[in-house]
Image 1: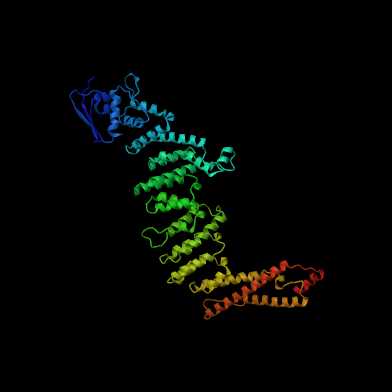
Image 2: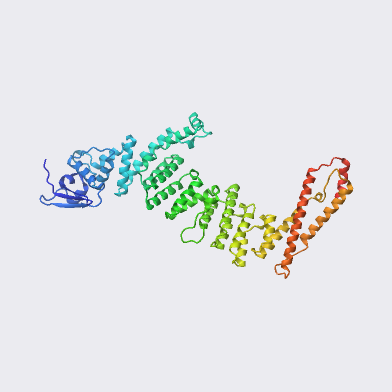
Length: 546
């Protein structure tokens, strides 16, 4: 049968087709809207389509369907091309004889997607991805294909569970035996990760859709995370900077919806270093920082030494560490175990000491780091004091007021005797801080002496005569009285003209008090260990102590 070609169709500027408009209009609602069911016999028209799905291949498929009386063999290889083209041409209504139109036939074929082979699914998914992302078609078909892919993976994971689900606490000979050797563990992992390479053709956007479907179907988070890291590593080798940015943003956003424990803190810092030169979005950056902050107690000092971004003079990115601390504390101070808090405080003090020599580090930033953690996080402030000492040495031009603000971060009660003594002699610190350190240390020694039992003033030994013990007790009581005198006889004011002399006197007295304290502690230990063997000696003890 010969057909009159009275319509010229330009497809996306790629190719031009001469067709019989009545035949095509018989199946296409779009052509009916353009020309009506019947047009004048001698009118030759031209139609230009700029965004036809699949280009010339898609329109050629439509023509084959129309010229073959509505019959076409739909397979996984052409299903999504046929569906997209049919939808564009509005081939919805059934034709004469109630024969299903092209769109209806593609939707019926899609219902049989569960019976396709894995290879057919991959072919269809690749085609569907191209039409959805390039041609801007609806994501409904893509989502359906992804659901089928995930369904297969769920079935496979149930048949071969991931090693993360096999432990000594889970019953079952199979899991127990497989976890006994490294070789069997690798075998299980290979059975759980066989599909990784098959899905490397997916774009970051489609991978994110795939991960959402996996999470909804409760696929093992460890396997999902492994796939994402495998995908990132494989794609980075040939990706442009912009492609790398999209990939790493997808990896971060996907992990943010997963169990925080699936990625080690070390891996998160590895991702962070990748992002430094990629200018990722603010939202993805915040998510990554929150994930790191939640595991900050697992970090190390080297992890925190991140170079400052371009345009900032600081040697290291202090603001980044402050955001980590903020995210860590967001979990709730009362809910964070003391051991975790103590560990964070320990390496934060090391970090402060590491950045203290930086001449460009401003006092507000240094102070913000020192005050970032609650006082309960530190059992000792010695490390923070040493960091302040280095900072004040490098920043010798700071005013007295700025030095006082920095010293306000110290808890003098939690400074050791050595640190207090060093501070009192340290000219880099304000005089008020030196006095405060001495007063606190004096108070500690006074409380220790007052809190000592009366028996601490003598040494008891069964082998010594009562006269020796009496002389020893008299000497120790004299030392105790002298120590008490030193703790109460002076009152120093910074405004005193002889402040320097008084300060030296205080330092000497503190040293003497420390010596007295050590002797008292030694005697108390001896008293605890000694035992009185004779009853008569025990009766004479109260007299000696009186």
